[in-house]
Image (tube, rainbow, N blue to C red):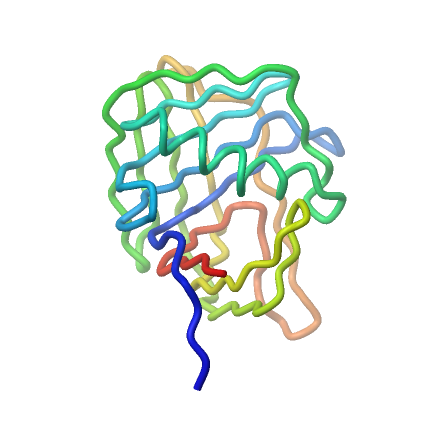
Length: 184
């Protein structure tokens, strides 16, 4: 039996909205139940060239963003999302998650919702390369049929993309991930 050193564990759902072929917004939530950098939550919102992060701990949010989130979203596999600037704000992050009904989160004036959870799968990668480092990562992934983002009570334009894979499972850019663990 081999062991790995856990870096963080928690939930990390995401939602990417589209109008036609154009991505209009992306949001990612991390609620860290334990990490080598402490606990807390953050909700990041990408629009255009800017990435706004509202978090309970700026130190934790910077570590998550620079080590995991930015390198993942810059990759071609996730569409090459980049941003010119990052703004950090400290505020409460409220999260309610239920694998039968979805997710509701609020941080500052940002609202993030996922609904109509469908297929639940355990995802495991024991050699996930990211920005020159290799990680072990596992999570329960739930594709959702609906997702919504709003800022200041105003819904952002676009819808999540949905498709059926070759095994007949719903896939979506509205992803509820729980029991997420990153390790080395």
